[in-house]
Length: 168
Image (cartoon, rainbow, N blue to C red; front, top):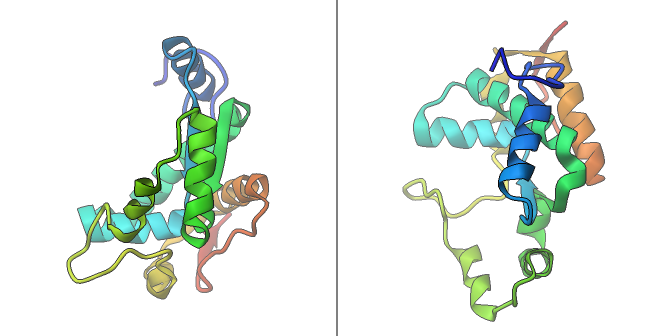
């Protein structure tokens, strides 16, 4: 990534301008949609599924958030994971509208199926009860500021673990 031209993310150095240039040129008629989930919930989930370390997941989340912020005007639909879980029906209808496809009632059956199952657990809207795993992890303050900026775009407060240790 070091030799790619254009603007880079301030936290991670990811080439955000190059990313969006390639994406828009490769898919000029694309509909861009995303669902944004709290990076701490993503980290808990990834730890359960793939044994990734929390710091690796949070570093990756920072990259995705920088890509999102740089290209947010390209998105036709942005949902928070909470919106999706709180009002699945409306969220799916909005996604269909943004994508220009017809809503089918059978689409709502996806809510009852876990798409990344953990044995013995139903689909979950959050993993806050496991956020204590972050108590020993030092996280850059700039990451929290980045995540808060993204959640401001969503019009929602960004939640962090209570015992979080922040680096300067």
